[in-house]
Amino acid sequence: MKVSIVGGGGLVGSCAAFALQCGGIVREIALVDVNADLVGGQALDLLHGSCVSADQKIYAAGPEGSADADVIIITAGLRRKPDESRLDLINRNVALFRNILADLRNVGTKPGAIVFVVSNPVDVLTYLTTRELSLPPEKVIGLGTQLDTIRLRSMLADRLDVPATQVSTLIFGEHGDSMVPIWSAAQVAGLPLDKWPGYSPSLVSDVEKRTRGSGAEVIKKKGGAGFAVGLAITEVVHSIALDQRRILPVSSLQSGAYGLRDVCISVPTVVGREGVLGHVELDLWPKERTGLANSARVLRETIDKVLAGS
Image 1 (tube, one colour):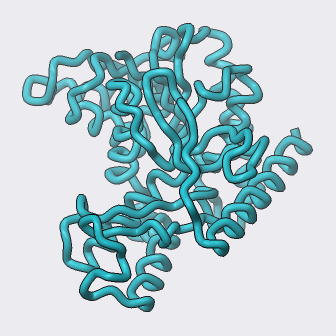
Image 2 (image 1 turned 90 degrees about the horizontal axis):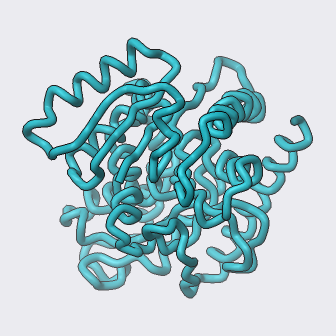
C-alpha cells in the first residue's frame, strides 16, 4: 500500500510518517509539502533509518505524489494567531484546504483511494472533502476523536496505575469543545470502570478535564502535538491496509447512526480496506445521547457558517 502525507514537512505529518515507518506495514510513503527543503529533509532523515525499520520506499514529492496513493493523509494546517477568533482560523484553514483539494483534483486520484483528513477543524474539513471532491462518503475519513480517545485512555491508565492497553473507553462527537466522553462503556481489564479499585467520580472528572485541555497544554509546553497524533493516524491506516475492520471513533459522513445526518462526526466506525464499512450504535446513557446530538448541532452550525462565507 502507498500512503501520501500532504503536509509531510510539518510536525504532525512527519510524526505520522515516522510512526508508519516504525509500523512497517505500508510499502511506500510519499511526503508532500509546499516547503521543498523542509520536506526533503524529513524524507532524508526517515530514509537514513530505513535499514532498521522495514523495507519501505520513503521520499519527498510534489502534489503528483498523491496521484497513485491508496491513502492520502492531509495534515497541513494553520495555527491560531493572537486575538484571532475560532471562526476566523477556521475560514483561513478552509481556504488553505481548498487549495489542497484543488491540487488533488488537478493531479487526479487513484480509483478507490481513501482521503484521510487530519487537519483542523477536522470534522468540518472532512465534510468539505466529501462535498468538494465528490467522493463516495465511505472513502473519506477524518481523524475525529480517535486522538482524544487515546489521550483519555492513556491519562486514565496513568491515574489508575494500570497498563494503558488494559483501559477501554471512547470519546464521540466533535474533535473540539463539544466532545462526549462515553463513560458508560469505560472498562479496565474487562471490568466496569466504577468497579475498579481506585475509581472515584472526582478522578474521572479530573481526567476528563485534562483530556479536554490536553491539546492546548501540549501546544503551550512544546508548540504542538506530534507523537500521539502520529500513532493515532497509524492505527487508522493500519486498519485500512490490513483490512482489520477495527471499530474506531473516527469522523465520517453520517446517514442515520444515532439519528445523525448530513454531518461528519465521530461515532464507532468500522474501518477496513474500502474505508468506512459501517457504524455501530452502542447503548448510551441519556446524557451521552444528548451530548452527541448537541455536538452534531454545533458542527452543523459551523459548517453552515463556513459554506455561507464561501
